[in-house]
Image 1: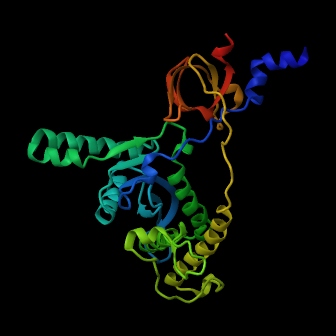
Image 2 (image 1 turned 180 degrees about the vertical axis):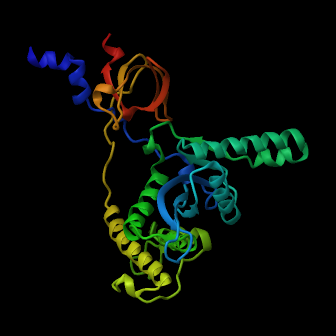
Length: 343
């Protein structure tokens, strides 16, 4: 009797219920397309980092951010340093990326306001060309960028570029700490970190165990060979007060390499995740919308009004009507209160 009462208690359910975890889906087709590097990319931001105006004392510090582009096919990364999280700053970083890596056909991202603002400006540009220059219309239509936004609050849908930001930002925060770099120094450090990330092994390039060869890295898809750096002395153990500004950047890079290399080797161990088949969320299911930043007592109650199954038939995104609005959310943010099947 007591267990039955607890099971029916809505307040207890808010604290004890577990979120829905559908089985992990297959890789999107863009992840194994045979196209050039950076033809299909994901983009994300990280930061902030402290940037000094100059190297003299009492220099004013501002914020800088990391903009990461990752190739969905080769896992190559491209890092850009931006001054803020506005749409113009992103568009400037995107122009630099296109100038060096080529125009992508597809972009995957979350729903950041700067990213969505960049998408809207590109759409306005396409419409302007269509109205005022019909001769270029066919060319731009053929090369139009397709932008794919993840559902709100669904960071797991951008696993590849979210993992790239985590890999770069986690150790970058640890090696830079509270030390502010100038814009030029930070830009140099980001480029060297980009080289480190693009030198990680993907697969063995030969099946012969006696063959002395290089492992296949993202750098092979960019320049056709491993990315090599200029020789430099080991300054990782030298006290900071004995280093020049340039040697300090080298020390931070060497510290980043050691930390990232150690953690990357550990990450190569495969860990199963979301490997069990569960029942799909269905229309008219009553759910709580889980929010880690608020108390379970404040989680809104809603009803599923639409479902979006993937190619494998598994529902991972749904539309929910609450008392105030209609929201699109991933199912791992939901707690099922009452299933429509039980009616």
